[in-house]
Length: 340
Image (cartoon, rainbow, N blue to C red):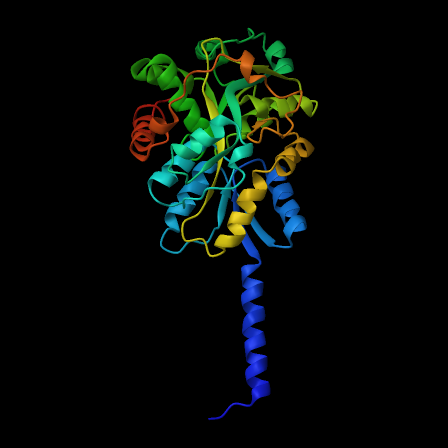
């Protein structure tokens, strides 16, 4: 059958338009706070004209989703969340190697994160682990002011402490891995068992415990300190604590999903998200992490990392697939099953 030139031309234009429409899209998996995720998505759309479909989930949930979708990837970029699951995704080949031209503008710790993962992820912000407490509830319940990790084991705090579940939350996994590194594995798990006795709820999201404390629904929330600062900045009676024994920290990360349907758009987002301009958006939503671009602004309310006793957190070991699985299984078997 002979096709007319007009029909063929129309068909080619239609296919080209469909291809262009498909290419001008990006599916973003985001593991930072909801309003920051929304701002990043909309700002990238404004800057490039690329439509962004954004889904917000905790880092543990996002990692599980990317793994489940490995044979048929749905997402393009995973932005935000603790670095450990990003490192594990890199180890399992779920994310792709990419060397951004923006690397020269980044802090050394952001590049170290990339190099430890074969350049399959990169650092976008950092933040120290700690906790915050509601000063009003503490006073109302005649509770002593905690200043160390081990203070949280006191019987006084039974039912007053909240943290996330380390299976779903990168924040909580960082807590578990930090306790093992601070106290040694045996004593670290003894700490987690003692803490379990005082926990009122394990949440899905890492920032939920301090939001509950801000609302007066719980007294103490174990979180990254910048999340506690955000509650205090919003006017809630929250005091932020950098524990006396020392603490772990996160390198929030970004990765391009291996097999991304919109790889070129993913790389454009990746480069843009490493710019000082994009990282300065954090200030609009009271995100108090330390940005990875050396030219980006850090809020004067952000925790001063130089004054916090940080451990030499072993990202390579505790971000590995085997170690993460082992620690989570041990927590599931030895801690979560204990009575409260």
